[in-house]
Length: 396
Image 1 (cartoon, rainbow, N blue to C red):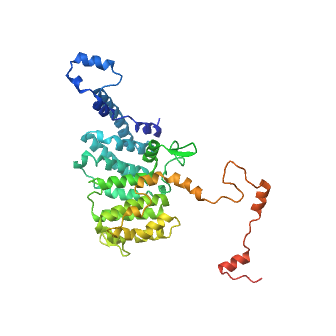
Image 2: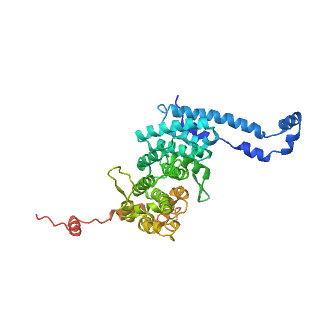
Image 3: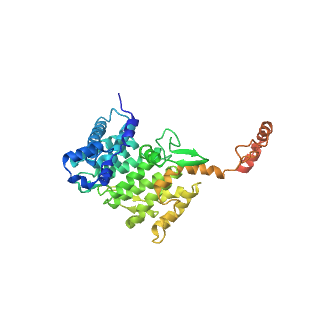
């Protein structure tokens, strides 16, 4: 029987880390007592000791990693949701393993990412890359291993993510996700815990931001990458921002602009002619993001239009701040507010004629009067349309 995604999502909520909290509250003077006295004190205590919790957590994590590795090795049997949830768990608990198991996990992730890119699966490929970048960003930064595949695979996986950038909660079966927003006393409440869990497992745009942040911090990713690798990454990010949903596009533009502002040698990307970074091999091609910003300047949404018009000047200026150009300083917080902003926009919508602002009251007009008012809508005739469009009238 195949595994279900809900089971793996439950494993993400395991209370790992209680041993450290118990060790801080443990009485240090009990270590000087003999074994019999300590055994008697342990039997009379309600909570377990830090040593007992540490052993229990180690046993539990061992079983969890066995499940995760078995899923990766048998990826042809499981669904993309199960594989994605397994890699979310590996990214969360992967730093607890030893170096030998870490190298084995990285080897499996490399095969998973390459297979997912070949199958045009953006969710699995990005989850695998994020997991690998998280594992290589911790104490294993000094690990000597072949990680040259990360930069190229990340750019290829980003190019596949466009169909999933239509909403922040792209993989959620419902919008908004269940148990995230609740209505109490006439107001909307946000469950931060449920929002974090939903973004971790059911959001490709949030996954793109996670991969981007981890790639910039990881020395094996883009932390020490060349200008050509960063130029290719920025070109892909601006292309996605020009084609994605306007709410998601602002978060992508915020992160891309921050990278571009830190790297002065890449400012030639803001020229119409672009810059040469050796991306075309023998026949080199110029890379520019001006053409991706051009459709944003004509966007109907106010914030993308503002960013498209002022991004070039803000990035090049030494005094201008990106925070003054974007509506939010934190891209993650901006993405979390997608649903509340859509609901808040209803407050500015005009009230239909004949309806009271108070939802509890009935409309002033009767149903018959309202139906007759709707029936009186006027339309342009064919002659008026041809006159306004400048089309000559056909002679009879």
